[in-house]
Image 1 (cartoon, rainbow, N blue to C red):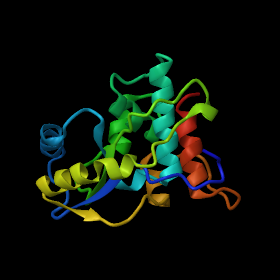
Image 2 (tube, one colour):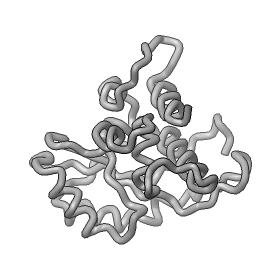
Image 3 (cartoon, one colour):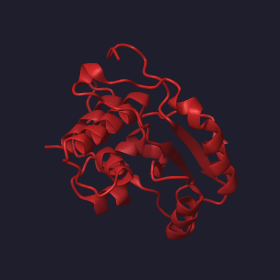
Image 4 (cartoon, rainbow, N blue to C red):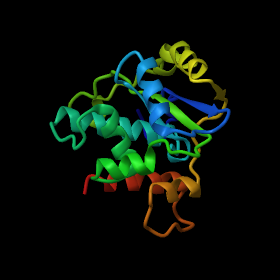
Length: 187
């Protein structure tokens, strides 16, 4: 994919919880029982900055898996760790996972595409969102939530949640801040 080309929608669906999240463990337990496999995860709503940000996290997760360099024990946890921009899995779940009081989240389906051996060989299945739309909507319904008809948007609130520790200046977009924070988790 060309860097100037708009990436396809990442398989992410916004879910609004009618009464907010009162018990994180109960919500995660319910989600884990409902999901069909471990490629599904819940991500804090504010920490998803854009389609490009989510695809970058996915690519980094796949690359770490392929090279045997994952820090987390599973792909879903590695994805959350990278989005949070940290080496610490526990901190990642505190910052990028759902919390009590959250009113919304992203239901994420990690694509199964292969990344090849280099960035030029990455194949992004442009149907990955559509392929799982029905299953995502069933998850949202069974969790007692409502679909949010919005795509990920970078916000200062999201940067604060992932503990972005650099100064934001007018030469960078918020999306660039999120992506540089993600990349810093590898350093």
